[in-house]
Length: 258
Image (tube, helix red, strand yellow):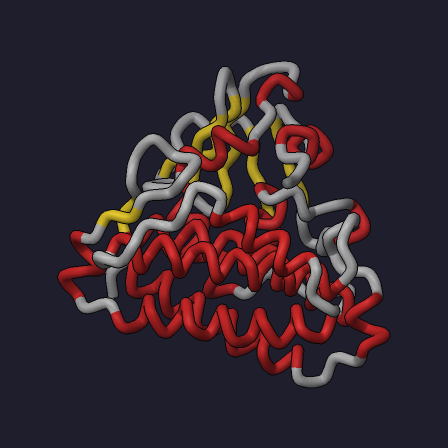
């Protein structure tokens, strides 16, 4: 399977897992806290649902449909923010299912050659990278939902494996956006399951590590949460450690979250 194939498969499995959880959520749980410190559980579903609607519009435009209006994103966010909590949950299920179906419908040639424009980027993305951006959002926010119900929840292993590969290839630029290398006193290259996380003037991840100055030990899903700013001390598995010229707290400062 190609990276695009595996990313789309991971998105489908993330949707199925969230749909199963959503079926049992009470109104009180929807109003309660999530793993995202500033959002209640229903707001996570709202964010994911509006994101699905916006992402699908971008995909449809790449396939020859009309390009979204300049204010499209803001109108979508405003509409979702005004929805009642239960409607946000149900809307997420419908819109995310539609997005997953649209991605699954792409044939092999489209998955290889289609280019999709993203409003805030100066360049289009391949289907693999486009789907990878959505997976990064869904995997972390799915964790925000699940950790509210299970304090030991982690990012799905399938998603973690796909995302680390994405961040070491077409989505490497995202680490440059979210990483804060100035928060580290001196440069470091961290071995993460054989990948090389280099923090110097910028932040990058390579598929193979050379001259590592530190080592991350622990589940790969925890490393993915670290990169997404979701590895606070209270949410860190007992078998996670960092040895070498940086500490886990140092890395938390480099990746404060978004």
